Amino acid sequence: MADASAIGLWTIPLAVLGGAIRVSTPFLFVSLGECITERSGRINLGLEGTLVMGAMSGYGVSYLTGSPWLGVLAAGGAGALLGALHAAICGLPRVNDVALGIALMLFGTGLAFFLGKPLIEPTAAHLPSLDLAWWSDIPQLRAALKINILFVIGLVLAPVLVWALKTTRWGLLIRTAGESADAARAMGYSVNAIRMRATMAGGFLAGVGGSFLSLFYPGSWNEGLSSGQGITAVALVIFARWDPMLCLWASLLFGGAAALGPALQSVGITSGYHLFNAAPYILTLLIMILTCSPKRTLTGAPAELSITK
Image 1: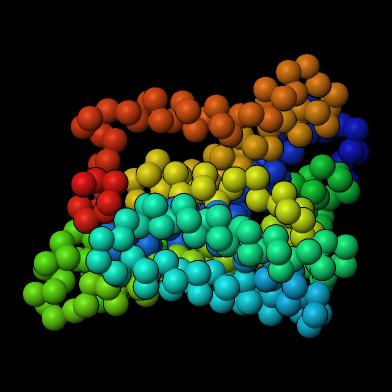
Image 2: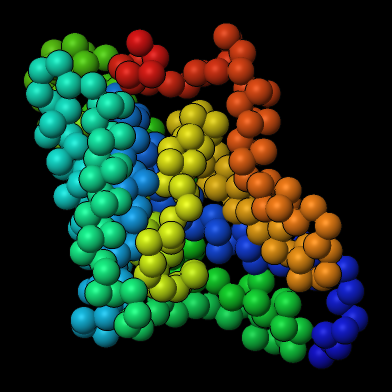
């Protein structure tokens, strides 16, 4: 067994690694969900509200039933319902899905705050974690490698979605609706029905991402739980060029950036602390600048997506 004091400056990369895994999980689920939605030709900017609603629903059901996994399913169900609402309204004539998404973001967030007021003080059952560093007595290492099962599910889900979008009939229909609505109609399919299912699937995943916030990290329900992670995750989809695997790497990158400030503070580096805490937002601006090219900005974007028209 290694002595904990021998780890030295390795504390910082270990803390960033652990933070990246924890913080990236909501980013991962929301970005994968939005990737499905946008590949069908629709954008849903309301996933911030879905994330918060999922966090509240998951926490409430876990508190009432004592089962955190029922809370995860309830969070996904709440997200799917908000996704269905978004898709149903977007299917009406002359409805802009970007404007509607912003409206539903405010609606979902406000509804979660209203319904979740009784849940601020009670303690709900939390999701378990996998201790991958059981063999070590170094607390920093054990903390970094304490991984929630939802992250593992997201890790597996990303390549599965790549495979499904490329090789399955379900993936073909989503990609067809996203590239050419006329082609989907010519094949005898309802574009609105395809996008309804895709938006509900995206909302389900975003709701599950919200349950991670309230049932694992930070593991409570309060009105400041999300900190804009939902809307940032939507932007990650564009950075990742609508590729689920790139969504995974981008989520880990942003999670690591968010963990940098607390990691430095843990070893006594407090100078410029607020600047390090702003690392995710600085990273967002840098990516936007580096990818702001007329030839590259929307490479891989579905042709029917609103932001490409």
